[in-house]
Length: 134
Ligand SMILES: [Zn+2]
Image (tube, rainbow, N blue to C red; front, side, top):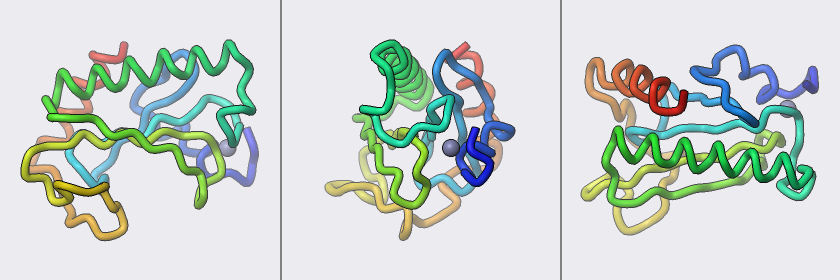
């Protein structure tokens, strides 16, 4: 853990711990079923990982992707890895739906209309996600 890294500190808010990462979701997420998957130690780039760490992270990515798909039934999953504002390796999962507010283009969290969840929907997603990734 890097003491000055806000992403390292996010571990305490995780809803699930996976083999190489932890899972974050929240009420201000930009699309229903959004997940942020954070790599389990302070690393910045994919090429900073050992082969075993990379394989373990991909296992987690595929597990989360499948879980979101089973719960939310999107038409497509978008994946993004940036790390510009928070330089700690993490993966954004953006499930896409017909008629979502960014249909035809990329999700832009900076301008997404929120909240995206109906009353009780986030709690339901959280509980099902915990079960699906366990
Ligand atoms: Zn970190």
